[in-house]
Image (cartoon, helix red, strand yellow):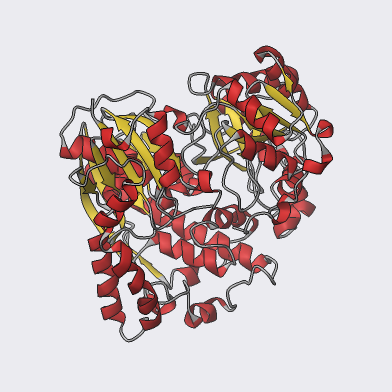
Length: 611
């Protein structure tokens, strides 16, 4: 029996995972435990969880692997500062003390942290370091349902690489090509995230959600920043950026090109300008990803594609690759960002370093991405009693029936069942649910429950067998990483008058039979639900379909703006009492908001730092 602990940390989305003989047992992000969104710190709590879940002490773990190589990263920082000198001295002087104190000597730093888990842990225990993009590529290929695949990874930056192409076959994976820093599609997208007033490494999905409200009228200006070749490779003009050496993403020359300074989110509202900027960078991102996909399909002649890295969370671009039928099959790692690096590093060690045999699972090896915490009924009841909650306990069939009834009456439900999801998406384990047929639901959930911008779209969870009846798509999408359009027969076409509306004014137009999950461009970010991976969720949607004829529910993450997804029953109750959720369904317990002690109500609208 061989146990491998994978760790990612110190940039954003720290996480830990455990493999047992190459099988993924448990994985979780540190943010879920500390309640600090995208927590970059050493993942003490996540490591404690995966060890406890696996019934292990740290001294019983055979190998420990970190998701990147700190010396190579340090080399890149030094070379960058030398290349841009004397510009960037301020940034250099701020970074160096931390590197010299901690990051450069990460092996001993990690060892000292690991000792906190288990005093019997010995220094001679092997600590390995994987390459950042190899970790991403391994997280995409090894759990995938493919014997052979070409693997495309794209993010901000690892050690040097920002984009890589790898080829995986059986238990082998080899990186074939790389694009290096400072040329980065992830950093380009993050520059526009910053420019439109959202938080870098957090607000990129907002930029993607804003894009359909705009027109890509700045596409040519974006292309002054990036030189895109026919094969999708690219170079960024560093005269417009500040990220290599400065403390901001963009500079004055960038501002002059687009005609405005970066939006101050505290003082300035989003305007049509920001929507058009979002549409423009989204279109260019899609162009790069499509060209890269076409080029690698042609070069390697492999029918399967795997994706990972932060850019792989751009489900609109993923949907375009799928739509163009460049590859026969696509699989995307659900924890595509740095959190998934912990998993990839462990898998790379198991297969590449130790040459272990790989058995391909026809669905995949991610267990629906339900790899986190789980609470038995007794633990749920104990936590709820301690929190002062008033709850009713129902038998399973009654619980499902009642919840479906509440949904059909346009109630907002906090849904907490089974294991917590690994990755940024709630997939029916820690979700807020609603009725997609309601034309008020999107606005109400955004403003009254999530306390976030009204333009933000919601995703539909749809029974897999009903997918193609409702959406222009017929492939599995269990991880909500593909976007497709609603079918024509479900659309409500806009009038000529409505088509003339701009920006957010489009939000209130009913565009389909399920308006709450239909974005302004008739698209939806789809999660397919099957009985095999999540019986509770499948049964609930099936019951909702029986009552309403609609096999779709709204699924958004169980949290408010700026808060990580809830992890424990106590987190769930706090969020329930701090929002205008109507019911909380947790284990076999149902909580009615009207029956709770009003003194336990919380003001969640200001509880968390805005993301």
